[in-house]
Length: 218
Ligand SMILES: [Zn+2]
Image (cartoon, rainbow, N blue to C red):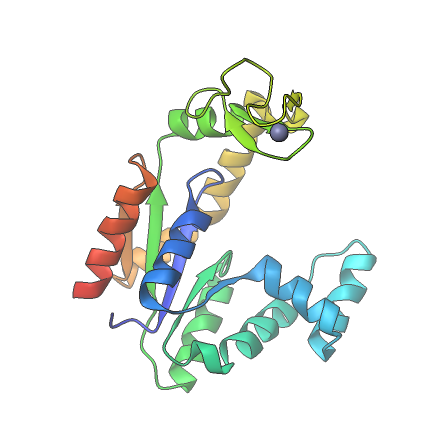
């Protein structure tokens, strides 16, 4: 794999987390989720973590320079020497430019960006069909992975709960917001010729195989 940094893009329900884990395992590089490293920096009370905490407690957005600083610190650690996967970052063009400067300063080239594209119909089924066991937390999907008895967990007979915000109108809104926010980033990366669009309508294993084969050859 030539690219030092991989960036994963995909709508909620596109299976981004699953693919990131699979690529990370295959190439032995860490998967870095901004949510996780932000929480970790807060917990460890680093200077940037404390700055982020103050903003979050005030109900404000964590400013770009804090998020970027936390990404920079995390990707400077020893386990990132061979490369890394970013999940949930960058979200804006200015953050994308930050990643470029950071990689450039380390003598690395442009990142490779993988966009997992899934049809809206499939995303809706994945997201609206979700049901979670109230006892053990097992996740089912009424379309793709139903329990044997409707509404009841196979393992312990617990009641399956459907999240209130898993209804179609809310999810369509979330997807629309995602596309609106991500479109400029996708165009930006298309312009740099570093975007790999992946058909995410297939089984996760097939997608992962396609992606890792491509990365091994490129
Ligand atoms: Zn259960």
